[in-house]
Amino acid sequence: MSKKTPAYSPRKETSGDKVFFVVNALFLGLLALIILYPLYFIIIASISDPDAVLGGQVVLYPVNITLDGFRKVFERRDIWVGYLNTIIYTAVTVVLSLAVTIPAGWALSRKTTPGKKFWMIFFIIPMFFGGGLIPFYNVMSSLGLINSAWSVILPAILSVWNLFMSKTFFESSIPDGLLEAATIDGAGKYRTFFSIIIPLSKAIIAVMALYYAVGQWNSYFNAMIFLQDEGKYPLQLVLKEILIASESTVGGSGETILQQYRLANQLKYVSVIVSSIPVLCLYPFVQKYFAQGVMIGSLKG
Image 1 (cartoon, rainbow, N blue to C red):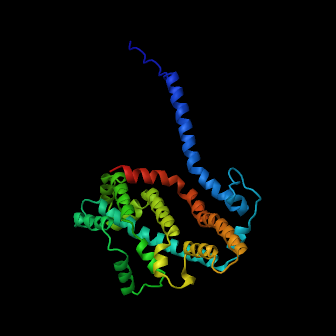
Image 2: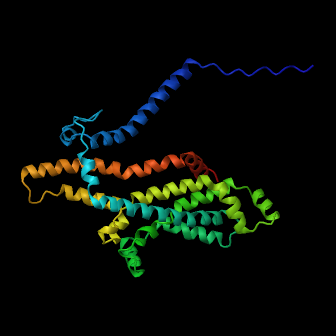
Image 3: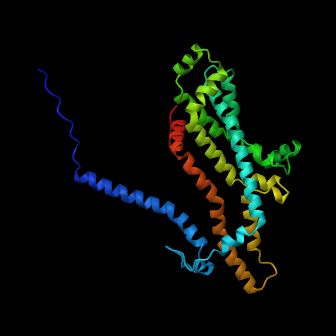
């Protein structure tokens, strides 16, 4: 008779293991505190009395709660126009970016793609070399895109880093046997891509959508350079103009200057919250795909 395999018994924790777990928990707790406290401080500072914030009284909880900063921001019509513009710019950018990045990443991941090495070099060069601001402006001007929404959208529709992340995802996640089976069943290249590859790529699509959305939502530099009509300004540029205007102290008395300084300090915290809320609301919808897409797309290959 064969001997029975002894039942597996987990190793007992030693005193050294317990010390390690305690030290690890303390370290991670401290790291989380370092990361989360600045965000918490922005929230409590935005609803606290500006004098209390300037006096260093706001540390762990709000002091003399007031919503004047939010009221002053949301009373402005240009804030809502900026919100609408940013939503439009972000939505169009995400759609166009996915339409470019996902097919390009799939094409670069295939060994049979004609001129694959050339296209890899073609995309790598812009990662290390740039023409600079003046040539960039001249190109946009020659295309007639100055003071156009497309001057904000077009430069943002392709990130080479995101393209290579998508390429690596496809190389590591789509087995060749699946493609061979689809070919045997009579599926062409387009049918295979849209009916098989896209449904299996929800993780990387969600991650790319989040990356492009956050990048465009927080962007203001291209708008500052190319847009002249204030009615086309994105939210970030509108908030920047508000902060600059609130910090202006030219021609005022001492009391007026102090009031403007208080207002500018409060608006600084309010603007961070106003601009961050939509992104924070978007993240939970793609959270379940985020870790999977990032880990597979960036570490395997």
